[in-house]
Image (cartoon, rainbow, N blue to C red; front, side, top):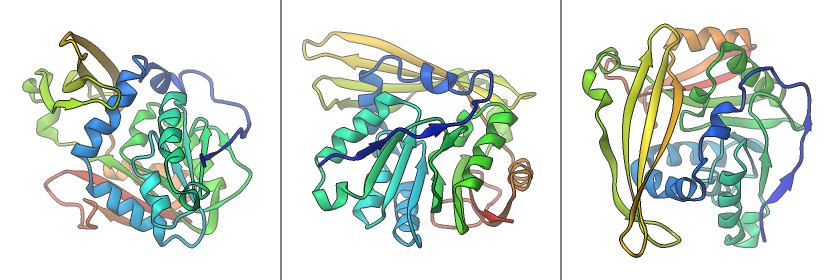
Length: 283
């Protein structure tokens, strides 16, 4: 049994480049999309346990914005959550659907997938928990986009529901580090699901401290079964935030901060920056 798919109603979209980042990313599909789980199943695990626990204990249905290939969503459904995943990338959702199709029917039936934009979705129902995992909020470059997303979440949240999302906590020294432009391997050569291997590198190609943007480049070295190597690159701007900036954004959208963590073990924010994890409720 596969995941249910819905075609939501749309209200007016904001002008400009709301889906520019997502449409530009994954343009070398299916290789980059297929590489996603290879990279992040190895690199990130703490956030999966954190969000799965939240979903498992939610007092109602869960909405995950930026669900991608289902790295967190599928674990959440397996833990008992009824969950809707929303993503603007059809290619990422296709990868997620293939995984859901292989699940036991009693788990797959709890999953609904929707292709839509997190700044303009209108699902016609509310949720006990809305999550925006793995820094997806940093793909929203303009303040108008950020507020639009938060306002949409507010409309889709139960009266006593919670919004939980994470962003990385910037380190001043890393923002001015000239070596950040160096290409560094973050994923060693690893097998791809369809055959061949991929090795990934990362580097910062530019930084704009006025607009708080980092230009990120991922290099994918894809080797086919004959040993031929092709390098593909994925480049996109990534917004970094500061704590009180986000607190003000949340307040403008009608939220109050209920908790703030510095890592997925719920440890407090500290002088050693890692991630900032916000738990917010309706004000």
